[in-house]
Image 1 (tube, rainbow, N blue to C red):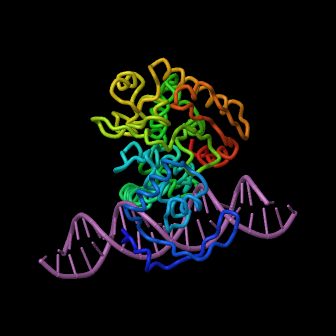
Image 2 (cartoon, rainbow, N blue to C red; image 1 turned 90 degrees about the vertical axis):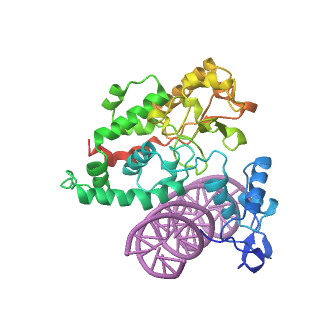
Image 3 (cartoon, rainbow, N blue to C red; image 1 turned 180 degrees about the horizontal axis):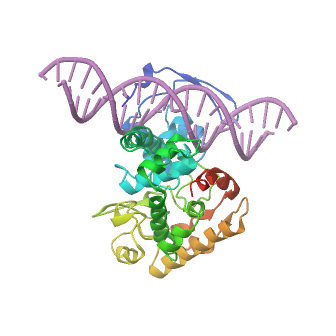
Length: 335
DNA sequence: AATGAGGGCAACCGCTCCATT
DNA sequence: GAATGGAGCGGTTGCCCTCAT
């Protein structure tokens, strides 16, 4: 951890306004963020929402560049961040997605609620890579003769995560999120299709993937109860758990939502019926995106808006299926 | 108790992409 | 179409902590 560095003694950079107007050189802080800086940025973001980051840095009274503010917000201050160690299920999802997406950490992070690309990247580089290497050295991969361009990929599939296991994970995941599909039917699906239908969770990094917009930056996103942090808002719409035994994302199942409504102000959906309607609408949108096979689909549904305080817009955008197909095509050779 | 090595993680850097002028 | 600036992403760095010796 880096020490917070005192502003007065800091190296300084020049800064440009949003339109390129030169602002007299001002001292820019670098290094670790102090609690005061965090508070300033947090308060500003909660009050004003996201905008031009360089403006945010200036208006919030921070001697930081916009880039630094953005990073701090995304990786640390966002209220919907999940803290703590990765669960085994999250780990498996990361490994699986990495086998398909490679080092596209932002896209992997988009499928893991409350996790940042930086966090996943660090986790991968420190923990998973090491474990995979160890695993491979202990038990040589049966796929070593496979003509794959990625040795790491072979390691993953042959050593730590057999294909059928990964399919189970996806099936489990999809059962939780889509409800109507059975594990067996999903196991029969092409793995690419499963991946394509995985819901994305936030737009904090932007990508070519479908993104759900909700009140993702509101303080209501994270609710606390006796069991720890639960995600209310962007994630709860899928209902159920994304992993086994509540280990993974701790998203309340549908039948729990109604119970929680009595105790938790953060719940947006009024009742189970709303939740089901919303989930169905989600499925419709996802299916439309998937079935239409269009490059870009942008849909806004009334159904979602009803379930969010203040009618926050919830939409699916930037769906580039062809690109995803290209990206995941490497996986087809393993089937 | 001291210390050195390794790991974890926050933050920076440089590049690319995209929107705007 | 070119130039410019902002945002986002992946790679890398470097500091602190933990643990073994």
